[in-house]
Length: 173
Ligand SMILES: CC(C)(COP(=O)(O)OP(=O)(O)OC[C@H]1O[C@@H](n2cnc3c(N)ncnc32)[C@H](O)[C@@H]1OP(=O)(O)O)[C@@H](O)C(=O)NCCC(=O)NCCS
Image 1 (cartoon, rainbow, N blue to C red):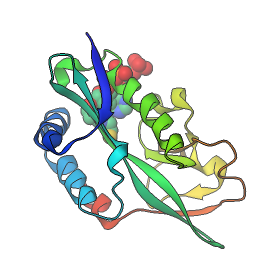
Image 2 (cartoon, rainbow, N blue to C red; image 1 turned 90 degrees about the horizontal axis):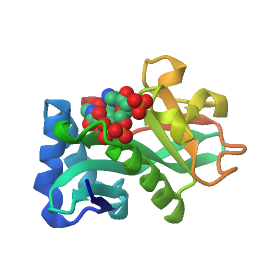
Image 3 (cartoon, protein in one colour; image 1 turned 30 degrees about the vertical axis):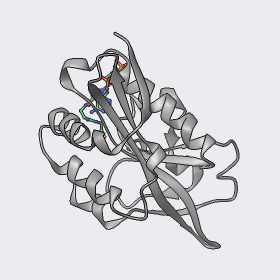
Image 4 (cartoon, rainbow, N blue to C red; image 1 turned 45 degrees about the vertical axis):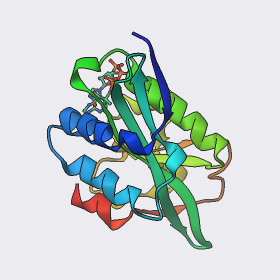
């Protein structure tokens, strides 16, 4: 199946909601996306869709701005969340392509790192490691292996350690 990955456009907003609602079986994640989209944390070129050659949006990934609170002040990073592929299109590599393409675009846009709370079997193949290895703590009560970071620009986290701060909207999911 042919598909391409591109930044979201205004006309994709309903389709993005549908992808997320179907993939998660609830509306919490699409509400999170809407909250981020209307906030200062949104980076329009880092909300990506996978679109088939027939024009159907079948996947979505969002990277949005978060901060790492260090002794020297806040360092900007990105949160990868959420990510979704329509159930009928899962297990074909679309989710992996969205992550790979997304990480490349994050680096091109000048962001040095991406942080994710996610599956420890899925994300390490894209370069994610436990955030604890970089001396980063998160606000979530999970085992270390679920809270991960990827340096999109090598060395960007050298000397950066502290607490990752998420916008309030993340705690409603
Ligand atoms: C996670 C998800 C986006 C993957 O999309 P996909 O197009 O099926 O991904 P790919 O085909 O590239 O890869 C499938 C992999 O996803 C893994 N996977 C399935 N559910 C997953 C989940 N909830 N979180 C992380 N990985 C998951 C599979 O184990 C498989 O791993 P493998 O390649 O080692 O076998 C898709 O399964 C989905 O939308 N799930 C529901 C929403 C969700 O849980 N999103 C992630 C949390 S934000």
